[in-house]
Image 1 (cartoon, rainbow, N blue to C red):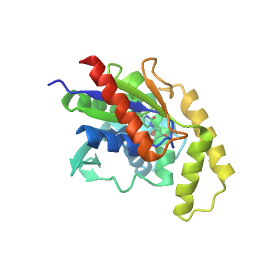
Image 2: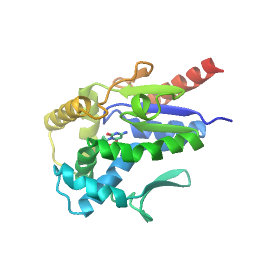
Image 3: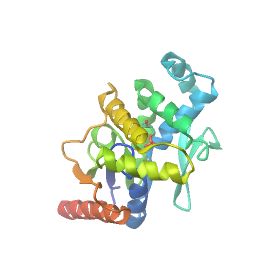
Image 4: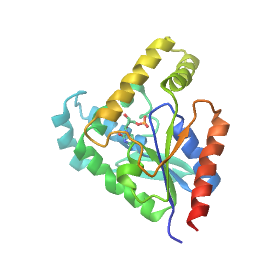
Length: 226
Ligand code: DC
């Protein structure tokens, strides 16, 4: 059977990765977190001593890199060379490095084949910013998952508070708006909804309701294509 591709794009804080992972498990598809790949390149660039903002410094690092995915008990691990770096890429510093490297066309081109290969060989739920628009324009299902900046900031604020960080809700909202602006106005693969993507707004939904809504869109769309 030909593999089926589900593309889920949207801004940060909409619950994309949690929802995509859960829905992939429900469907028996492989979950591909493309943000983790950008974070891994960010880690390699950071380890090479390239400071944030030094775009020219990124290019010489790329040819020696190998970024691949491995699945253990259904959980995605990302490998840099042979090393499992999954635990090192979730820091605030790597969020900055991921954002920095993701604006560079050579980095996007570098990851494109790996991402497309995954979808050629497995049924996937792939989440990112440009999956439905650039990476898998022929995906069977495209979803643009979003929520109001206020709802996303509120969730992020509670998460950060739980981790013991001292931030105000206003600061988190200002950061969120800035990141939205950066992501949607950058020249390379800006965040935008594909014309044929279904919009799911999770502002008023719980996590469980959001998962159900996304799963329902996928099943309905696939039914309609039979
Ligand atoms: O989803 P995330 O926070 O792990 O993504 C990390 C960074 O990578 C974020 O700045 C957006 C960028 N990214 C991207 O440009 N394209 C993707 N397909 C996935 C992530």
